[in-house]
Length: 114
Length: 112
View 1 (tube, rainbow over the protein chains, first blue to last red):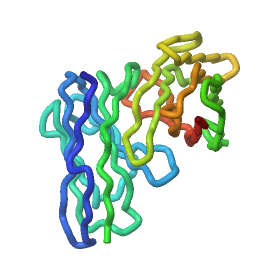
View 2: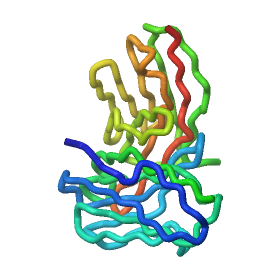
View 3: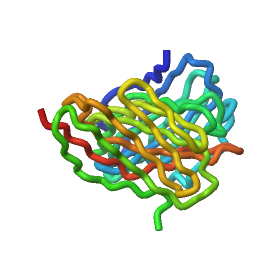
């Protein structure tokens, strides 16, 4: 099973709302990632968690707050977003954060900020 | 110069043709190479994973890596309309916490 599950699939939120995206994997992977993908662009790395600790933050604005409660779960908390934050948010996992094994992506959450 | 270059297409070929997709890169530190297929509004699906130079075959797909030329390829044999999608190359350096560096993606259209 190489499944990474993301919920919700779609989310519409106002600029003053607080919402969370969730990601789950049961492959025993120790690294999990958040990517952002705008239309017709490749995914862009946002955060890397390795063994439940934040390893990389690609200068992401503080209105995006990641959390890794355990080795199987990854959350992305959203607050005071802007319309330009509308995008497909992808979660991925790999065995290790060194990226020397395959990385598997979820189906994404399509976020619209109004 | 971007780290990874990939022609965005679109690339249109007839059903049954052999498709060749390519990426070039500039950073010789890249060691791990992946190809993903992405259908519209879906997440990327891992097709092939290779380490360093060489070939790897899986069904109708063959991945090639030439590190001396900094050039990677994906070949699709007996192409089907269901192969119509965006194909993303991705690579990583390894050796420390890292993410994937992607090409822009090539939009492939297989004509029935």
